[in-house]
Length: 459
Ligand SMILES: [Zn+2]
Image (cartoon, rainbow, N blue to C red; front, top):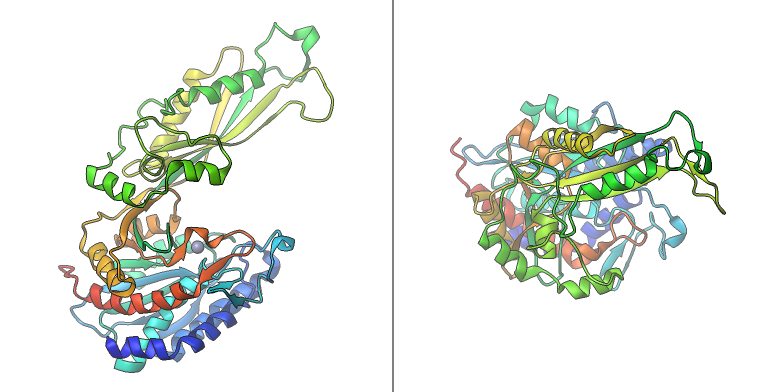
């Protein structure tokens, strides 16, 4: 391992130069005009893997944007780790808000700036560079490694999930290492062991068969928009508790140990409120802000429409209106089941005189790997070795949908060993990645594969 770490230290400039080359490829998966660029990023990644001595390195077709696969499977008796990342990036809009060009990366004040630096090219490249360091110095890897870098995490047709479900043999593994998450603070590395899921719905409220004049009909009919407001209000009480019957039945309670760990990393709530420009944080009573965000279901309205919103006044009673909502879910909630409960809630609480209809738009299953599992503990050991401090074991409020696919299709836990920072501005102008985290991530991954190799899988 020491030789590999020394190699990584000696080759830092070249690793950074390689990353910059990859970052210059405009692999914006949501933009059909740049499909060739996404393919070019895939080819670049496959070429890199082949060059460092990974086997079967290839661009693979998914039906959507191409993914990349490679493996090295010569460690009998050792676990097989699937390294996952994505070579596509978010669109750069609004491009005028960037202070440096999104696809011409700049290294300054300890950061590399540009689209995809933190999400996710800089992060997955920490693995590829670590693999190079190990193969170049030892000719072998401590455990079996498969690499799967997809091309449509941020957009496109989303065929990669089906590809994973249809190629469970190719991707079979004992654990998936995902580097696509971030630390809360630069001084405290974190490993994410649980992600929330989501249940997203649209609700339409229909009233009269045409728009009406409120002078001629006001007081005679239920106004769909008045009803819509009541319906939205019915989802939550004044203390922030979700009122959908049965929604909490499958919610796994936070343990005292989890709550203590979260408290050790959380920013003061008034500082967060000040940063957001709100008078105070708010949410379900009885829980701290991070507990609510990481470990409790939440409810949000994302948009609502209906009626007259132009300048001036128009006394219309709109014939219909609607809204889009989502519930973030926690282990062990099931999105399809929640969608049914929400529909029942809407029917029960729909005011008289109008009809409400829900459409379940999409769902994602929450993911959790017990914090005391062997792979998480191995990862924690690697982090401590690389960064000199015990990482916090935390959850995240967002989803990484493919981790649920890995859980379902491969029966493999996703170990979220990210090297980004919450302040990296991913998906925004001026996305950046700490150069020290790029190099630290490479070091950490060398240790990570070594630590994973010690895990007994019982296979
Ligand atoms: Zn990402």
